[in-house]
Image: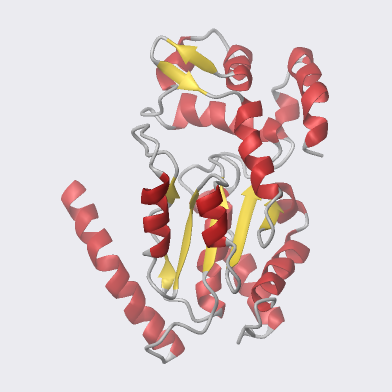
Length: 273
């Protein structure tokens, strides 16, 4: 199975490029502006990814890169800034990139160059916490917190750890406050369109239109008529096709937060809203 997946990943760029050549009847893909989609884990990255894939149907892009560019590898190693910048600069022309990147000076400087388009999606921290706990406990057995979460007596206890973070017995996870410091850093960046997950769910068409406007602010004119482009993007959004899909709704935290958790949120989440 691993060998088959490796072969598929090796052949994917050539296959996707051939499809794009046939679709757009061109060999050059330099006209449309470079696009990068960014997020924090469990904050809507796969929803954004589906929209970016929809972009390849309405604008001449080859494909969306299969693998995200990460600040921290799955094994836990934090990449050097030079490694990340090297991956960013080597994204093929005409390919949409995405990832989980911090707003370091090097990353922000490269991504916000004139003529580039950047989307950063973020989510109500309360829903993000609930999603993270469910994902690590029930959906991803290899998650670093899987065994520890399952050793705790109930969901509330797991949620407490997700809020405060942990650094003991070989387990290390930052607090939600520390995690959202990285979100606030992206919100302060110029030339980055910051998208709330909730707006893409509850105010979808207006938000998608704004994303298309962001592309055209570079001076590039999207060749697909706006109404048709919007229809394509709406069709591309299919949350159940994501392997991390659980509910696809907003406000689910109200079903899981105790009074203690709500008191915490009142003290801190005023910053988010």
